[in-house]
Image 1 (cartoon, helix red, strand yellow):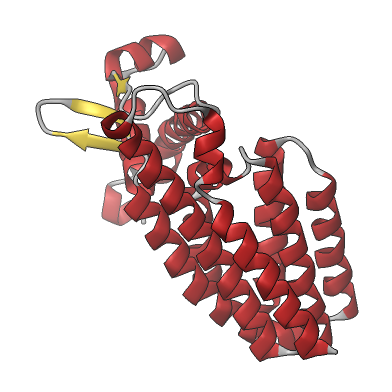
Image 2 (cartoon, rainbow, N blue to C red):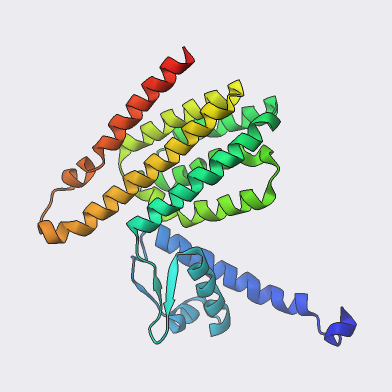
Amino acid sequence: MSDATNGFPLEGAAAPRTSTSRMIADALRSAIVEGKLAPDAPLRQDAIARHFSVSAIPVREALRQLASEGWAKIEVNKGASVASLSADEAREIYEIRSALESLALGLAIPNHTSASLREVTALAAAAKRERDPSLYVARNEAFHMSLYAPAGRPQLLEMLTALHRRGERYLRLKFGFPEYKGESDSEHTEILAAVKRGDVPTAQKLVAEHLLGTGELIYRFLTERAALPAVATSVPPSAQTAAAKPRAASSRSRSRTADEASS
């Protein structure tokens, strides 16, 4: 390595800048998730650099990282801004997750042990107890990823982790409606029961329906929210919540079907 680089310590030189850019990216991502930086808000490189007391280089790298993850967009002659929430993107993310997580679960179930199932059960219980939406999102991801960990497919799990991160802002919309937290917890219970039975087809079907349902719920909410100004200038919040009601009904029907199939 020294011969190839004339003795220049590439790794040592790159580490501080990489660490700084990661720190900035994490801080901006958290501000976006928490709503402190709204969709389409400008991400001015000079202002961010002054805030963190750094040069423009790590800020530029942080913005590129956020853009690659879908949190920001960078346009020529316009600079960077917070990516807007897209109904189509939300639905697509959950469609992809549905396919990949069904695959991962099928690969993982034969490799689950009593210890790994205890861990999954504990994570499901922790998510069910959680009332803070931001913490629930993290616990929800931990539950899902623990289901797939025994699959032994590191690249697949890496892809799923990236999709969870990309979909985090959208998932928070769902848990803005308390009634849907209980629904998700119930669906988690059904999935976990099928995993414990070693019932691969049912577990795959349940996790696919769980994710596709979430994607459709968020798609409807964002689509109808975008249409509100064109329909009326003042629509009560309850009308927005009601837009997603068919999802709850279909989930209950799905639960009854699953119960009948297992009885």
